[in-house]
Structure formats: structure tokens, C-alpha cells
Length: 486
Image (cartoon, rainbow, N blue to C red):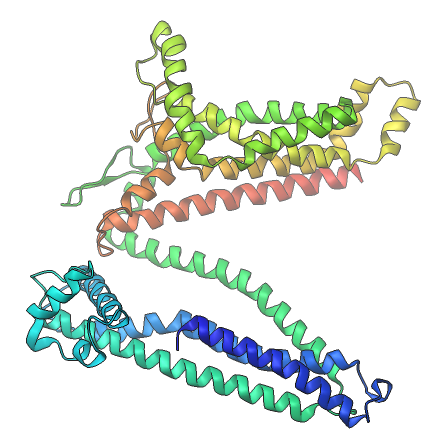
């Protein structure tokens, strides 16, 4: 059964369980709801939880685990003569998945029967022609072992889907039956529902934590594999970035890190003053009508896709800086530069600083302003010596959020700053960032047994450590100034 139909069936059972359990509970109390331990709806919701929760949990776990298990089993069955090394095996598995998907599509569209898809080894030319009519290219160089692996992959997927359907329906029906049987006047349905909701909430919170742990562990393991192939000293202290997939690569981090920090610094140098001054104006000086117009207009900047900012940098800002600043001053002739990407990124970051700072400044108690004005301070002195110190922890958090956003930006850098990895102080020279090179190393046919591909995980882990350090610094500053203020 298709996954969508399975989910809809479980939901239909849960809806039926709600009404059946509710009516059974009322019937056990002679139709008088006041004789029930809980409200009638609690009995229905108890049936919904017992029907949905086990089945959906199984579906979620199965969806995550099944592809890995099938791939592990099929990959292990491929002979060593066909896949001599892990890189070749990963490429072969890509072909296996593609062929298995093609066979499934052919069966679904009626070009092949299930038996033909299972037994095509002796008539591969005819099957290739049938798949080609559907736009599925099997290729003329498909080895028999790969075709056999694809058939096994498809068969295991079909078997797994059948097993999932049966088990999920059994769990749903079992939960339905248990909930209905328990629905009598003495059953504490409210307590059961509250425990179920608490379990769901804990599971939802755990998903976020486990996702973070999974991301970190995946980066750590792949980074460890990279450093098993490439010296960590050359990576962290290397001054040249020149990956060569045929060997002899120079994978120095410093040029990429310099470009990342340089562009982010220029972006923050532009966005922080503009955003903070805009926030002060909106919170302290602007009238109600002006604020109602200005704040939404500023926040629109946060909703513009970064690819649009990149095009703006490429077509407008880059040529403008080149024609009116770089060339007349003798700094360069390229429209792609650190300054181009930094300024456009700074425009993008203005709402991050402005909106958050505005909300934080607005949260400062009015009594502080009144007390300062009452002792003779002017409005500007009150803002400078009372409001901003009180709001400083939140403003620091807004600035560091903008910094993390700048460090992780990709599209503006690709179109505005170029892809040249170099160490240079000239802001009108083309440079690149860590995120751009991560995309570059993982684009196209990648061999995850090579250092040139695994370096992307080392770069990602480096960015993770940098942003973690920024968060720790922000926490320290916030606590220090908050204690001083309190």
C-alpha cells in the first residue's frame, strides 16, 4: 500500500475510534456524562492517541531505517570483482537505485509486469527499449551483477512496504481495540490522555535534540575520516586552496576563512549601525503612523530570497563599485569583490538587527525613561545612558545572530564576490568563503573516499565551531551585563 494511503487509513481508524470509544463510555454510564470519570471527549481522544501514536511511530522509524538497511544488504551482495573499493561501490549503488526506480516506474505505468521486472536478466535488450520509451535510460553498459542488485533492491523495497503496511495496520487496529475495550465509566481517560500528550511533547522536543546530535556526529565522523587522509596541520595552517581530484591537492583553510571573516566584517560594519540607528528611531522618535509604515518596509528585506540579493550584487552593485571606486582609485577592475558581497549582505542583515533591537529597546520599562527625564536628562542622554545599556544584552544577541547569518551565506558570495580563494587586504578583489567551497566540493559526481570530497565536512565542522563560539561569547556578554544592570 502506498505510504499516503496507509497514513490516511490510520487516520480514518483514529476518527472512527474517537466516536466509538466516546459512545461506548456514555453507554456504560447509561447515557449520563456526569457519571463518567472524565469528559466524554477524553475517551475519544484516548482512542485517537492509541490508534495513531504506535502506527505513526513505526512508519517514521521504518522510513528512516529501511533505505539504509536495504542499501547495506544490497551493497554487501555486490561481488568484490565489480566494486573493488568503497568509491566504486558508492557509484554502483547510485546506478542500482536509478535502475530500481526505473523498474518501479515501468511496473506502475504498465510497461512491465511485476514478474517481468523480477526476471529481466535474460532479455535485457527488450527491457531497455521498453524503459527508453518511458524516458528511463538503462544504459548499454549495465553489468549483470548491477542489474541483479537492482532487482534485489526493488524486491526488498516491495517486501518492506508490504511488511510496513501489515504491521502498521495491526498496531492501529490493536490500539483501536484496546481503547474501545477500556472505555467505561471507571476508566481515567483524562489521565491517560494527558500522559499521552506529555509523551508526544517529549518526543517532539527530543527530535530537535537528536537532530542536532545527528548533525554533529555526522560531521565529526566524516571530518575524522578526512584527517585520516590529509594532515590537520596543512588544513588549518595551509595558505593555499587548490583541490585536484587526481591527487596533489592543497586544502588550506586560511584563504577561505579569511574571505568568510572579511566579507562578514564588512556586512556587519554596514548593517549594525544602520540597523541599530533605525531601531532607535523607530522605538524612541518615530510617531505611530511613521512606525506603522517604516517597520514593515524594513522587514520586507528579510523576505527577499538571497538569490535576488546575489543578482542585485552581480548586476548593479558590483559594476557601480568598479566604475566609481575601484578603477578610479586603482584598486582593481573586477565587479566581483569582497566589498560588493559585503555591502549587499549588509543590506540583507539590516532587518535582523533592526527588528530585534527595536523589540528589545521597546521592552525597556518606561519607568526608567521617566526617571532619567525627571532628573533633568535630555531624550538623547536618556537613550544613550539608560535605554541602550538596559537593552544591551538583547542587542548583542541580535548582532551575533546577524553575524551567524552572514557567516553561513552562500548565494550572495557566489554572485557578488567570485570564487577566488586568496589572502588579500584589498576589499575590491574577488574572494570566496567556506560555504561556497563546501557547495563546490559536493557538486557533481562525488567520491566520498577521497579527501577532496570529505574536506567539505571538515569545512562545515569548522563553521559549526565558529558559530558555537559566537553563541558562547553572546551568552557570556548577556549574563555579565544583565548581572551588572540588575
